[in-house]
Image (cartoon, rainbow, N blue to C red):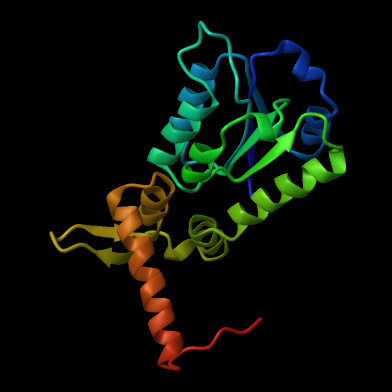
Length: 200
């Protein structure tokens, strides 16, 4: 699975943080944005990628965005992007209710050890690896002949191939969301009717 780590932090010094070196050692695509608006634009324009976000909370008063607004805007577009808050702010000194409501994936204090920080990041990696879009992508890679086969027909007559559905799910369009819900319902129905079983 190709993975992109996006770090949004307005402190240039953070580029020397040990966690960034660890991430760069482990992942080929690590992108750093000093301006929160630029980081947000990159994420929203690359929803077709597997992205994990490390997001600072506080930015300069001259910036249009802060951690709260960035998380909200990401989650309004896609639930498939794990956003990890990465901040020096003490959790007890900041109101985290909206972060919880907007489904932040986790919180890493900037003074946390590399080992403990990587535990949370690895959980985000697992989340992506087991998401529906990556399962579809793995299927396409292993059975390329299936990618253009029509598998989904909407009520208004639109036909979607497996490749089309991958795009729709990744970009969290209404078609993609509807397909995901229906596929999950179908899977559970088949299992409960004992028409299918899941084997390891």
